[in-house]
Length: 318
Image 1: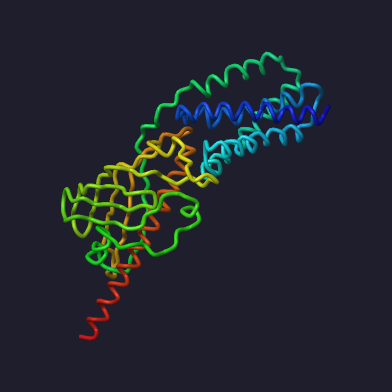
Image 2: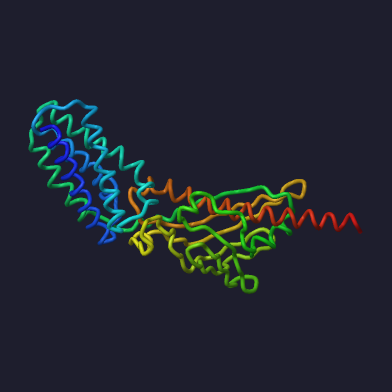
């Protein structure tokens, strides 16, 4: 009976979780009910079924409540609903919520709470997950990263406006599929100039909106390519969240002259994302934006310092 109850608990909870995620994914509904409700509900269901016939210890209940997440993750990979990157990013919030659902289920068993509580959760939460508010998160966010360059602003400016291909190998995050910069190109100079940031997933078209050499370059982002290529066994995986759920609006390079003919570069990006809970996903989005900034700023730093050293050597020879 113990083995049967455990198997039944996992089978039903995984089936419920997968069905809800498949429905939400089909409707491109990436709101807070999906990322918080599904893990809690599957953990709760698993423990409710596991404890239906007899009382169980808390440790066993919590252990059972973690398995639905793993089962659902495997299924959405197999059915080409999501990739490994998004599953990994969701895990830090999904696993604790699954444990919380399991803990609530254990409390109901232990204290003999009315089965009406469980029935209400099973009826109300799925409807909230599928039909809850999933509107895009409209708040504009920003992330700023800075670096110190051993070269004057005039030298740094040459590589801020446009820089050749970055030869540094991408880090683990980018190798996993997250979009990363390769090079930039610019047509002309001044306000209205067209600029292109070539990413690993496509081209980000930009228009210069502030041109104050050698201290300020600001540009409007006219188009945003996919934020990532999902890591998956399937080559044609194309989940809805790759389209329109991350939008970059504006970028800026601000140069400040420092003593000793050095320069501080501050790179800022303004963007929005359509994922809830917004604050949780902002942790990830800010992290990715900072990593993109670091890759670009380190490249500019290397080019400018090499240029500055070369010019100094030429001056000494003269």
